[in-house]
Length: 259
Image (cartoon, rainbow, N blue to C red; front, side, top):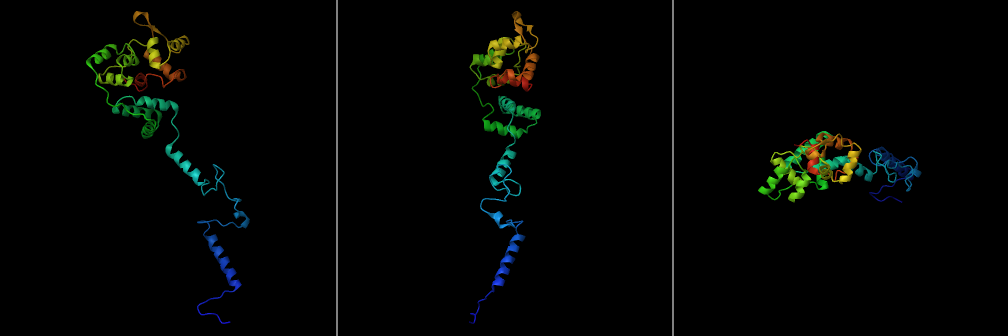
């Protein structure tokens, strides 16, 4: 029968040759698109012969040895960095006591001491809700007189309780008056109880174990400890106190070297 115009007939040999040529083209493109296994059994639906993710071992790996989900997780971890150590988080919270200028200076000191980038510290603080102190109600003349009379003889925590203010507010006002937060005659047991947020009995146990260093007699033959000894105690025995309970303003004065 004569063939119809415009139609082409191929022999079986030509069809087989075309398939073989097509497979060759796919193989040439395999390095860029899809790898075609030599063994047809390797393409079974159960994933036999395919490399699995080196992290989860549950999904097919891509060229870097990771599946899509594990790659995204790894990227997020690299971007966020390792979690901040608990002691750095505690100091970061204390660094946010004060106004914006004080907080900025504290962040600079903390970044320089720990080697952690300042922006990472700020980002971590923001996520945890740490903020610089905002505007507070104005101080009265009577409050300022009481503050000036008692700074250096009693703790910031004691003054804050008496005035009904936060410790940060007292510390900020003392700084504006250019007055020191440090106790000039050293710390007695009651002072240490206030600044560390512990019981008097616990302070006495520290004394009995010799952790507070050599004591001296203050006014009225009261047992007191120098600031150098207390700073040494803070540095050598961090497991003896809870950073979340200490007087933040006082601790900041020692750690960051504020007067």
